[in-house]
Length: 136
Image (cartoon, rainbow, N blue to C red):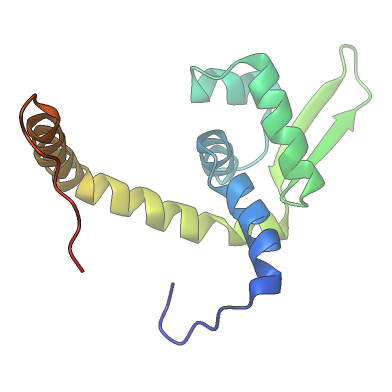
């Protein structure tokens, strides 16, 4: 939270719901890919890699429902469907790119912290060792 943030309990549910959508790994990848311009479903699936057809469909539907992505169907044979960020969806690019940059810059530090934590947890779980308890 930024300094000066005022906690409003009534907003927690709505904020949590939105963060759940935009914090999802597939959403981050889809929004990032669509930041380069409109794409077809199979292009997205191929570029993202590892996402199932069902998960991509659910992610795109959720983003469309939230007003972040538009779906345009062209009357061709077979039908052509393009997905594109809306103006609202474009406003999400900067925060997503910022978080991704932060993750890349700090992944080594996080990996080190996990090793230290896991060693301590393993040591504390050893027989005959009393687990650490937080002190006030």
